Amino acid sequence: MNLKKILVIAFLFLFTVPMQCLAYEPILLNYRAVYEVSDPLVAREYYSRLGAGPMRFRLVYEEPGDLDVTILIPDIPDAAKNVTGLLKYVDENGERQDLELSAKEDEWSYYRDDFSGNAYYLGPEAHVKVASGTHLLVVESRPDNEKPFVLKLGSEEDSSIEAKFRTMIEMGKVKNDVYSEFPLLAYNNFYGILLLIPFVLVVGLVVYLAIKTYLRIKKADEEEERKSEQASVNESENG
Image: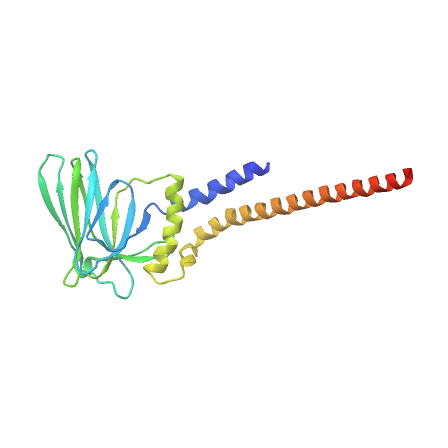
């Protein structure tokens, strides 16, 4: 197998293994009063913290489709199981609907993600059919509206290389900013070991090519120097 094939296989492995294990792309958000989601069908997890007020998500649908939403809270010291949502949407029949997303404290179920090692409590969820247009989801945590939360939207995986790269970067940011842990711990698992294999292979190949190029240049310089010395000797003998 030639060098180009090895590099292609290594990069394909590097960018396909993570998304096979992590379906939802994490996105770290600072608090903002309104946040627009232009592709709510795509599977993403939005990490945020309420800032003394509710956070409104505007969900934009270009055509009728499924609206899948789940509210989670990260398992960290200052989190609380009092995060709720209110979904205001137009259903497939054109009727306006208000759906409250709330759960009692004992209804939140503990969940630990095997890929990142992050732990959560799964809360209220909804799966509805919506019309095209803009729908509104209001998230709050009474009475203070200052709690962290995770909003899981969509179910369709973004299989692009850009999404895979963003996922790997955001995983480390979530581990650091949300869980206050060292970012590389996001990859401290079996899948991280799998990711390490092609990474080490690529680094090894780069080092190998660098050394090979250096030796080739050095050999060419030595050969040029030898020819120059030989030319000087010849000139001396002829003189």
